[in-house]
Image (cartoon, rainbow, N blue to C red; front, side, top):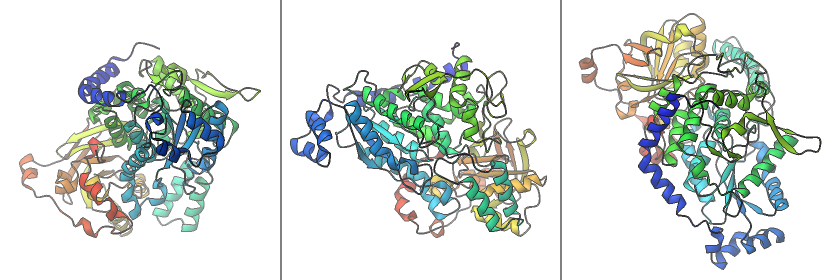
Length: 605
């Protein structure tokens, strides 16, 4: 490992200094928990009897003795999510692994797990972002019984992993590991699927043809194979030290996957107060781990959702991460991976090319990653530059990753990156602050200056397209889509239409206070605009025909008018009560009222 890059060191030190008081308060709180023995020792006999009443005789005897670790299983299993369906058999598997090793495990609770892929463009998507905070609360409820010495978190998808981690950090005195289940086998090529979607948007493909393409892409159990938020979650858990090395993208229901799960169970027990090396999750997730997460996001061109989630995760650990930190690191972290929608490959091809081990090895060698961190695997990130394998007897081992990428079209070293800088950039100007993902935007589209066409719903864009009103240069302004307005739904339905118009030669961009999760692909998209429209942000003052400049080269986002003219213009307002009533939306009214701005994580902080 080379000397740490000066910008990485500087950003980390600024973060550490900014967080000094809040981090100290957090550590004081979790370190005040009595670690001399299991918390069960403080339960009354009645409390404890309730806690083991349903256990078998072997587990019950272990829990009565009080001197063996008991691990919580917090599961996001349901069989509607392909990524989570493999978790159906995990509780029984984990309990048996624990018994064989001389300790116990119990399902402490389940957390809701909604699928953004199913709710895209539907009213249910308005519940998506705030489900992260609900998952965090449910996780805390599961851990609240003082029965546990560590925890195993079973979750994969978009809001679920961030929610589980935020909840875990609220019980930061407990050690814990995230246990993935792996991606589904590759389906039809992602570019082929994308072409059918564009043909459907253009009226040149039938619904049956579109459904056939989608079903051939999302075709069996396992995580969707494109590099969206779910797989960005897996990358983050590994580069932040909460997965075992190489665990993120191993296929479901294989001997190697089960061996990795078994080892994760044993590792957490060893990290408990009753084990050999007490290491709580609140100490693993420190400023260096958070910065490593940001670096991984840049190096892989990961989901823009993590400019919300990482801020909220850091906050839960007493760390004051800001968008400025993402921006400062973006200039020095090279883009080393191209995975769809930022390239042709899927995560299986990324994994086969060397995956996380190659990526981490390259970043460490270039001084672009904190190597001196604690992980569930031990001290230091160098162990994560290894790949897992089973020997002839089925025993799990790790070996160093190959120093050469297995596919340079998917994964490269720091000496020949796809881009010299990261895939995410910040924009700032008289319209506020925003985020743009540039990892797949063509160089000649990094600056767009065009008149605004204003919409207040993504469906209005499709309607205008069908009427033939969008065959020109323009910037689509889709507003009243922020966390305080309607829960900040993802706006994936915009992508096929805008991409098709761009392919026709028009200079197109998107400006929104909503989310895209990186699914904007080749279309320049200024997202997460803050202040949002419902809070009186200047995005609410834009009118049809206003000239807007989106300049990702210089990090600017402006409506081209004199400041005094913008200051006196009244913001447009809208009646949000008429938008998508029902579908559970009313249950999240308190969340929207208490929602933070996008740059503060957009949650209930």
